[in-house]
Length: 284
Length: 159
Image (cartoon, rainbow over all chains, first blue to last red; front, side, top):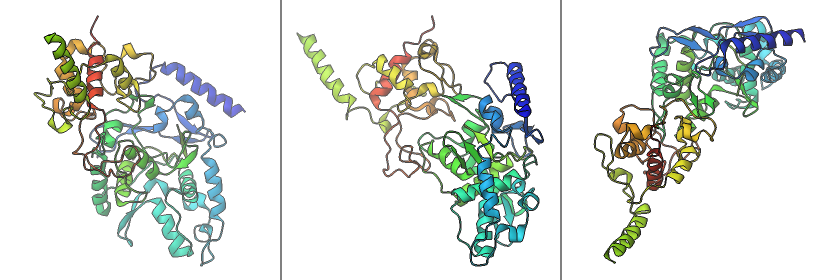
């Protein structure tokens, strides 16, 4: 109760100070559970030309939406985390193993993992997202079935893995063997797809902070994924969100887990290097 | 009598133009981004233009542009310039060109081309996310809708 009261008054004060203006991000501060400091604003990484300061999408959301992320008891995405904690301990597949059999406590063994993914996997010779790594564990080590990329258990598991890195800075590597994938992702980011001929950059680099009809455009950062969307009332993967955006340009989308979206995920993640891991976040 | 006959002929001809005989998207003649000739030969209807501009499934112009005269409709965007007084800044032919395909006048503009059917990257079947099945897409707006939007824009003069 005390916590809730304090947070509400902080938000109210911030809203009053910021005034009614909608242009750009607001100046609110994100501290989860009164203890996890989330960096929602940082100097843009050196590789970015068009933007000086990067912001978490949280800074573009309405006060009521922001408030849901301040406390894990209010954050509907944390239900997914709880579900994944149960799965973590549950044996599945022919090898008689659970995640915990090898990785013990997710809280300690997975700390820092979300921050550096997608990441080059030397043995596989490819850039891998968390989903790819989880499915590799399931099929190779556990002898279990793959999960669907944007299926419930998979998204919940990525929420658990993200949650234990909250507050740590995103820091994906874009050089060395990951560079060609990163370049491909960058090319996709600036390509104007579909009948509306829109690139990611048109909205999220050139127009963040502006309204497009009723939507307040953010920078399209993915440090908060997986993200609980109030509109769909569920946790969603990064690729699921990419699909929605590409579809809305009246284009043929790419598939979950496609090489194009893996590359785009690496590139977009790298635009958030310096922001805190924030998932599971809450958005509208 | 002669005048009446001509009027009738124009009306009949004009009505035909609004359908199959409208200038096809690929045949529109641009000069410095302007389109001097009506796409249909039928005078634009500003009332319908207003509807096209404010309806999400049609032009949805206010998604990106603010128009004070349309403030009955909620949520105007800030992506493009305000259209207040637009008819005092632009000629009708220029507005027709901008609505039909703004990219010809403004290289690299974010504004979609509303009267164009090909030349897209991974064109989709509407908003389904699936690939388009035909070579030539339906333009985002029909020829007469564009004439109607231009007619509405021409009412937006500075006081």
